[in-house]
Length: 51
Length: 198
Length: 373
Image (cartoon, rainbow over all chains, first blue to last red; front, side, top):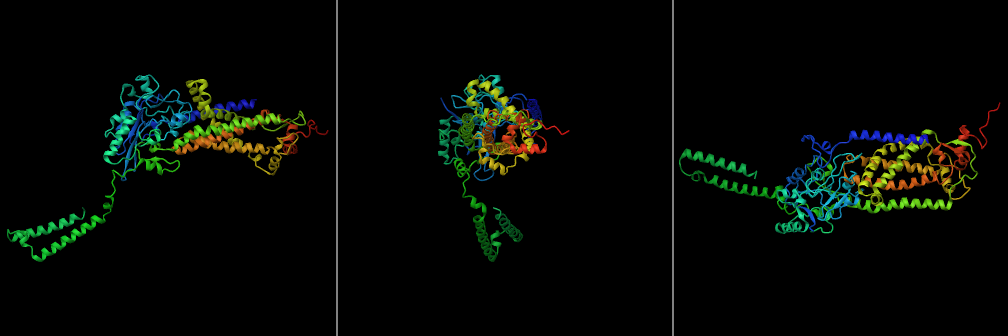
């Protein structure tokens, strides 16, 4: 039983850790698709919501 | 009720991107979201054609069919809209869409790609018509004001037509007859399988 | 035309020199000053030049293109669509940095939609409900597999803590991944009508988060499982014998010999490793859609992910059945790590002998031997 609970806890902690790591790699489209010729500041939140 | 459609006359499109600019301005579309785009076939070669492409508001919309949370709906005019409150950002609608209309605010799928956004035929969304809440989520609602989509209104050569499907099909056919050629009603066979010729 | 200019220049130069010399002589017309022989040469020269120019007009490459009418003979949509091969797309040039926007029409999306709404539910339904039915019938006909000689009361260690930890890590992640994945495929048909749109969408959002993030501990568990158990899961001759006798599963009293893992368990191991790897690879592309940045590639990987998922779930249902309800004494292996000696002798006789030879296990059903005084 202990081992089972330990496994569940490890899975949950790992999932949270992974979410933090992946969200540092997450990019909004305006950042991912900015080219050298375009200077994009904050394009606003219309249609896409905050964050 | 009229069944509205888009028709881009590729023989008139000069790739000026006025339709793209008008859409971006009207709905304050952020950078990275491309509700409407112009694609040029055979660029630089004889017979080059440009087509303005956005959501075609298909008859049997594949996006609506594959959505795992069923967030799409079709209005009485035939406009295909979706609810951003229900959307989970899974990306399935993009894989199904023959025209690549769905756009996402983020590039990785982990967590979410964000709420899907696409051309609304300037018809807003499920929120109350012409309210700031609707504008913030879905952009302007011109149809509620009795106007047609701004991309077609702004088209410099009147290549992009929007409105009643039968009427714009008729206009296109007149043009083809008069000038003697036409490269096709781009996307109609795929989008409007029930009435591919108008 | 390029060629006319030097000719024109030459002609005008001739006239100029002629003109200057004529003016120098007198104010008479130029023509009167040109000698007859020179005039004859000039007319031949003109004819030759005209013929030469005509030759160039006809032979010049650009002349051939004049027969193409760019306005009328443009790309035709229906010709492009007919020329498309399976899964291909009509693409063009765009000014948007996102490469996926270059696709103008991809008819394969229609086929993908058909697969996902028509064929996949059938595959999933047959696999999962079919397996459920098979297991129910098996339970009814064969009943629970009992330990023939009854429990001895003596235990033998089968799985160490770390092995059990790895199994439960992978298994618990699998359950959540399977349920959240099935929600994507079937939730709209089965669950949405029960809970309503908003509640279902909220639940699906969290299910999607869980699916995306628990995939990583699942992949870690797979890797560890592979490393710790690969050596006991290599197929051998004994497995062939075991399979020929149906593993003894169909009739009472039949106990073909097996080592640590019998052929059925080796099958499960390889299904988990191969199926899990396919799920991981396809899932990786679904997590990072801008690695391929190609809608056709994404469609392929979603199909793999969905089909393998259905088969994987069906296989795991059988594994869960046999490890819990299907066979008494089996769950202890993963539950406490220690199994009954009689159970072990019946189902993994060769393994028990190996363990006894190593001194890891008590011999027979007698208590552990006391060293001689």
